[in-house]
Length: 293
Image (cartoon, rainbow, N blue to C red; front, side):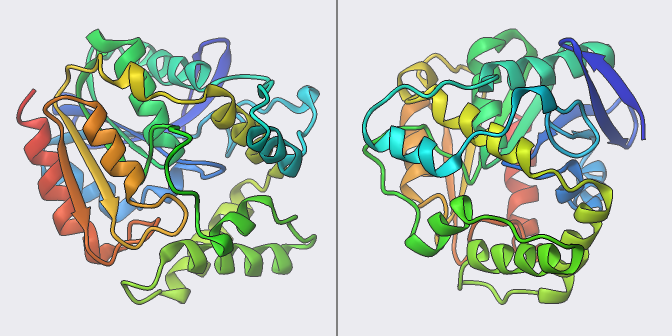
């Protein structure tokens, strides 16, 4: 897959479809590689007349790593948040938003439809605030505003954020499948075989825990984005699962409330994942929102 030089780093990316179709930039979440945007889902988006671009965020997958920065203590970060202390991060969500814009620059794309999942949704929101002229439409999936008054993750979901990762390929893969099972929720049957294939492919492609920790720091350091979201004018769609244990539905509702004129789609049974069962609703909603641009 190709690499692009953007914002003083290298970004691994992939594309699907005709470059003359509507550009759609997909941004994945915390510690997740671009392959978490299922290739079949990308192809279905191509069928909706999109030129799909997916990429590895900094510090994950095959994009630039920040080894020299050291690995922050995740539990300490969350304790600082609870005490109301400021989080110091090596880089910020603004930096990650600028990475995405730099990738579009390298592809000579002036404007694009922006879609992000979880932390990727936060980055997409920041892009829409920070680079409004580059955004045709915004889709925020399973994300939130950073509002400290919102409900916290369920205990079992919170635990997977701070739990140490085991050592050894098989143990790490097994733990990864269990993490996916927990955040998947109980509304839609969990496909363990499919999840194991994804976790195994991700591990074999790049296993890098330190970047995950630094991305958590970047997310926590930004604080409450809700006031800034009021500036967003691009057609906006907010998608959230009714059974999301990691990012409770109030996060999606708060996002939609902050952005005037946005549409909120709560998908019944969906957790913090995008299983094939919800693709028809997602595809229809994203296509409809893009048509408003």
